[in-house]
Length: 246
Ligand code: F6R
Image 1: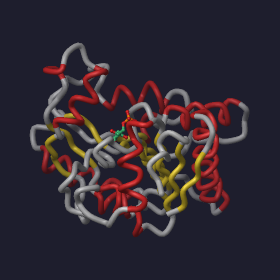
Image 2: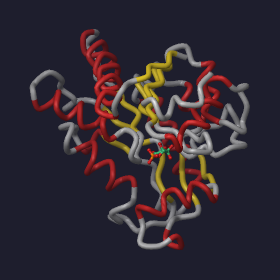
Image 3: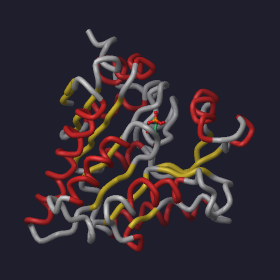
Image 4: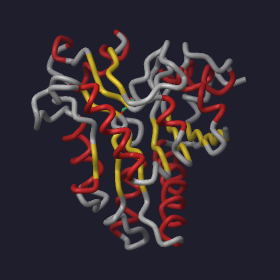
């Protein structure tokens, strides 16, 4: 696991976006179309801003890239502005010039959620696997919505959001009660299958989770620590998020 500490959030975005773009261009140079794993939330916004700049400047073409969101809430009505399908459309698909038909989000409105999760795993496999997975990290060490205690080998499935995650995400909803209780999330095993992982974190509220992920034991109480076993994971963080590293 390579850790890169950057001075500002904009620099975090530039360094992480450069890694994503490098993976995408390498795939295109081999005649393939890149497959991106897409996180939502605040952390990756500076990556998406930089990727959008590259696309706008003609430095990168993602029009044939495939995208797979990390996760989706269960129970929000289709079109809800905080559903990750909508968030991905607004913050990723449109600004990065991706084809909406090539961008998938787990179906949190499915009547059979287990079947929807299995279908999602199969779609990732059918796309040839994820070339580069963009990740944030929860203050409790989750990646995707693999909350503490998640199996390190887990696949896409239904999870219950931890109280801290629901509290953290209340900022996106009118009240705490409106934050969904369940989600569909790529599993830790699914994330580990990505050829490259690029995790970003900013701010002091992520410092304990970053220290546990990078320097703690690999253990389900800090799900992100499984990335210590990934052979191509980079962690791009600001000084505040790095402040508890030894
Ligand atoms: C989002 C996701 C989560 C977030 C994490 C951090 O798709 O999978 O793991 O990356 O909760 O969220 P932010 O970036 O909003 O602090």
